[in-house]
Length: 611
Image (cartoon, rainbow, N blue to C red):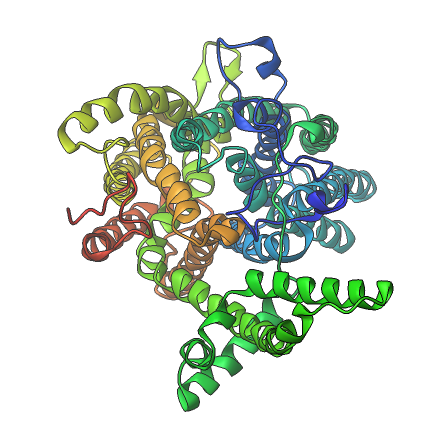
């Protein structure tokens, strides 16, 4: 049994073992875990209204989207960057932020444990957000001292730009540790061997995303208004304060969590090296497990041998301490000697089995690659909602009444609102109805769910292209092609359908990917599994950044960039049509691989789509 502090360091390396509480004792299911520690339950006991895991995830999303959602306005405004450069830079930063969870998940699973990784990442978040807020003060000082021509803003200082980007990437590093661990740690609060809690875990992913997006919708409206109308310093400072408060709440819930002990004493890369060496030796000498069983079938039973050696020692000590001759010891000694040498061989074989297990884990991860790869264009399309969608909205008529203008980034809240509205419908209507026809408790399989969302994303890009084509036509008809600062007489509500479809797509694809990569990786690598899900959006962001940069360079050389700073002279609609075509090709490839995929546990409720 581990010491009292050990569970807080543990990862999920022994998911099959029983959970423990913060003291290292077997977890009491009535006092730890479950919905109490994982998620809000609306309409239940008041004790559920103080959920530390839920609070820290909402705060983290509040902080991340508080920075990322309106970032293009800050880069093209106070920092004075070009539209294409700003979009490419945001996509690159998002790519780093979404790929770092691979490292964070591995660190949590093998060394730090999820609890401590969340704690350290939260502290890093607070540091990065505080530095972002401070960077705006450096900018303000520079503006007061510079002298610029009338109507033009001063260029930011090199110090301010460098400090801003260092702060921004600290936030990316913080997300890399935070994101893969909080959701996996929340799902760990449900015992998959308990029938009731196992069913609850499937709903957990729906309601987790529901609550997260509910908080995000408020973030997008509130913080984008603060940033556009009050100041960027306050706009970055508020997420810092919220993150600090959430960390305090998270620490208060320490006694209610379930932890899992890691039994691995080797690091991930050490095991990988030994596994590779063992694989080469197997190729030369055959399977060690079979050889050991042929040498001594009993030797494969390690627990029995360890008990036999203990029994040998006990008899020998008894004989020597009492100076009494034990007649049975003569017959017992040969067996003791055999037990000793067999146990030594058993330890070596267990190391081999451990390395073989690592190879098996690697194969289990690699078999997910086709699904991972065929979701990348979905991530590329998703990246446009916080870049070009926002720039489009900034050119349109955003007035509500005579005195209020909707912040362009606030339109992203329609994605979150759609998710908040649709997840209960999906969980309470779509799943029961589809269950009646499919016979599966989850209604449709995880891969079917992901595919539906990818189709909705394709439709969203088609609608976005059509709306942008109309916006360009209205700008030409109104004579505003060369007046980018004059709003186009076209209501921003034209853009709402593409946001709503993105939200509906997320309910299917995002939640489906989360559950798929949590469920289909080896049990001990579930933080890494959720990091793989996030890496889809990291690589997708890098692809989007590369596409934008290449297309901007090529079209600029031909006389007119698709992503001109004056969007009325650009052709973002062409870019959307390109993404729609790529999404169609991707969907065809995805269907092929999804139909041939076999789930890790064929006997589970998630039957394969081929059935």
